[in-house]
Structures are given as structure tokens and as C-alpha cells.
Image (cartoon, rainbow over all chains, first blue to last red; front, top):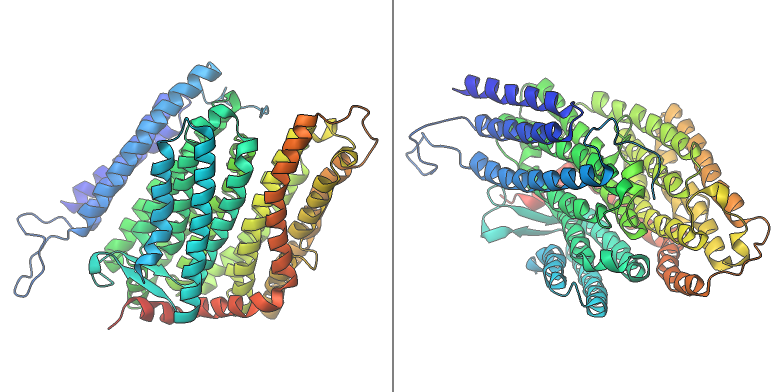
Length: 112
Length: 495
């Protein structure tokens, strides 16, 4: 199970990076979203995947799920949700005001 | 008493929420923000006093014992940096009303500002790697808000790149924490530090260490990851640039300092040697960037990079003297970068342009501004008796003691070039023929009111330089403290 998840996270990372390197703004935003999904799956996998075991550690129980990765992933999901929505708005405004959504054309030396 | 420590993070957060309700009442929100900042400054000073007399304060949130719950660790290093942050913040908040446009002020500048302060303080104080990530996100979110404030064409274009690079490195940060968690099974810095010594495969830890370095180096703008920094830093309002230049890269440097003195000290031959080389390249390439342009804001923004190099040099040399030098330089650089960004913002404002070729003879109309800029240049270049000198002296002493001649030479050459790049602004902008047209009365009036926050910052750097005798013992103590991670571990995890 861990192997499958690791491969899945890796695939998400690869496609994310591929999209990040594109010129169109929307593809870049989708790329960042894919990378963050990859990162989240990866956290979950790193805490070992167990089914049917409670996240409680008391005397006499040696089978337990590690609750910490789930707490971490939740925080991380909320953060990346916020950042992605901000990035979408920013990309929309930037492309509207600059008149292009092509990263090649979004460069320049005027700073005023 | 330990709850007081959390208040230094929560107070700015509360201030952010309260100021958000008054965004349309311009005068109220200004006075309020200034009051909140000063109260926070006093609060942090009290906490600093408590820590210096009673030792490190640990806050275990929800009374969960240290390795299980979230801890906030207030040691001398962290709280000194939080105090410096608040000094910079106070100067910026008094400079802001004249510098910001009405539109920028009513679009929640003060709320974002307080959130940024809260995030930076949190990043300095946290004792937990995942919380470090969370506070990084808090400060980055606030910075995303600040950087687009004003909605300009170039601003949106450059901030897009800023957001993307930071988002990518944040996601890598989470992934790296997951790696570390799978190896040592903890995110509490003290416990991680304990457990890395017991891990058999040191090779995988070095890999994780380099990943951490990549993440923090992106935020701190170390060579070769500095390319994103200068342009986004000059497009927003000067106050925002000052906050970014003074605080954001320094949080990255602080994280490298903490992680590579506390956790990854197993393979210093490899990791810290790489740091020394990268430090030398960072200094040289940063200063070449500063020499390459005629835009005064861009010159100052490029000068952030060699300063990062100096601090990396101390971490790479990894001795008590060198680390004290890094800490001294870190404090000095936070103050002086804020002062410089505020200064060039003011110069661009009174001259009506930020192009050096179009300026001339400003000193006839603005003598105080000119001499302030001159002092700031000397501080940045590290000329005695100012504070930049003390930090550089300690770093070079440390470098010579460890016989790292190459990086010492690089640092001396780049200091000279920094002086050259900055003095160009002074010579070309302030000297020269007196312009016939008298200065706009409104502009010179505003300039006077914007000068005194800068005066406060500059007098602090003078104090840090002249009074080095008083400050040095405590900085030396911090250097010693960083070299002995066991003290940190013992203070957090009590058996």
C-alpha cells in the first residue's frame, strides 16, 4: 500500500512540475495544486498506513495508527487551499491588467 | 509567566483583526496601529527582560508535555530577534501614513502588516518544525497581501513570480518534514535533535539536511537561489519593501541557523563546507547585481544578497566567534535594511524618480536626508564605529581562526564593492549642481515627517556599534549557546 501511494505522490509531483514549467498561467496554477496534493499524500504515507487500528496509545495496545500525520496534512490542506485560491485571483488580475497570460510576455524592466 | 511569551505572537494577530474593522476610518486606524505596535514593543521588552534574568521560557500549549504538544521556546536568540522585528515594525508604522496612498491604506495595509509581524515573531519563537512551516505560511500570506497592495501593472507581474517561488518552496518544506518524520518520528526540534544522533544511516539524514537547506535558502536568497528576490522587492510601496527586506530573508537565515546548529550537526565536514562556498558566491554575485543597475531601489534590493552571504559565512565556519558574528550581523542587518529601504523610498519620493541618471544635487534641498543616507551607507559597508563593523569583524576573526582564507577575502572584497555601489547613489544623486527649482513645499514637509523613523533606526545601529562593549557579552553567550545544542534540548525536554 505504501509503495502505491509513494508512486502516486511521485506521479503527482512530476505532472505538477511539468505544468509549472509551462507558459500559460492557468497551467502553472494547476501545477502548484498538483504538487501540493502530492506533498499531502506523501505526508500521509510517511506516517505508515494502517487500517482498523485506533489512534490511541495505552498500555497493552501495540497496534495503533499514528494520528500526527493526519493532523499535519489537515493543516497543510487548509493552507494550500487558501494559497491556491489566492493564486487564482492573482493570476486573473495579473493577466487582465497586463493583457496577457503568457509568462514569456510577463517580463520587463519597468518598475513604476 | 510563560503565557506572556505567546502574547507576543497573539497580540499582533489581535491587532490585525481589530484594525480590519476600521479600514475606512483613516486617522483612527493610524493612531490605533501606532499604539498597538508600541504596546507590543513594550511587551516584548518585558519578555526579553524576564528571559535574560530567569533563563529560557518554554510554553507547552494545552499543558501537553514537551515532545507531544506544541512548544514555543523563548530563548535569548529568538526573543532578541523578535524585539528587533518589533523595532523595525514600529519605525515602519510611523513612516507608513505619509508614504502610502489612501487606497493602499484603506485596503487593509495595517491588518496585513500586523499579520506579517505575528508570523515573523512566531517563526522566531516556535520550537516545532511543522509550526515553523505554519508560521512561514502566515507571514507569506500576509506578504502576498502586502505585495499586491496598489494593484499596479508591474506589481502584479512581479508578485506572481514571488508567490509562485514561495509556494513551491513551501510545498517542498512540507515534503521534507514528511521525510524527516519518517526517519526520526517527531517534529519537535529538541526531540529531533536528540534522535538524529541515534539514527544509524547518517547518509539519509544528510540528504534531508540538504533538502531543508534548499527550502530555507530559497526563502533567504542564498546563491544560486537568489534570482527571484530583487525585482518583486522593489515594486510595492517603500514601507512594504522595508518590511520585506528587513524581515523575510532573515527568517530564512534564522531557520538555517537554528536547524544547522541544533539538528544537522553530524556531517559538518560536508554541509558546512558547502555553506562556506555558497556564502562566498552569494556575496560576490549579489554585489555584482548591485553594481549593474541605475535604479536606486534595485541597488538596495540587490544589497540584501551579500548580507545573506555574510550570515551564511558565519554558519559555515561554525565556531563560537563566527556564530556570534552571524547573530550580531543579523540584528544589525534587520535594522539597517529597513532604514535603507525607507531612505531610498524617500529619496525616490522627493526626487520624483528612482533612476539615478535623472537625479542631481539633492543635498542642497535635503541636507539631513543626504547625510542620513551617507551614514546608512557606512553602516552597510561595515565601517567603524557603526554596527556593521562589529559583525563583520567577528565573522572575519572566526574565518581567520579556522583558516578559511578564501571566504575572508571574498567578504572583504564584497564589502568594498558594497560601499562602492552605495556611494554611487550618494555621489550621483546628492552631489552636483543645485537645481534652480525650489523643492515642492508639500514634498519637503512630508519628507521631514518621514525622516525621523529613519533617524531612530540609524541611532540604533550607531548604538549597536559604539556600545558593542555592552552588547557583545550577551551575543557571545548566544554563540556559545548555539554551539551546545544540549542546553536547548535540556531546557525543552525535562526528564
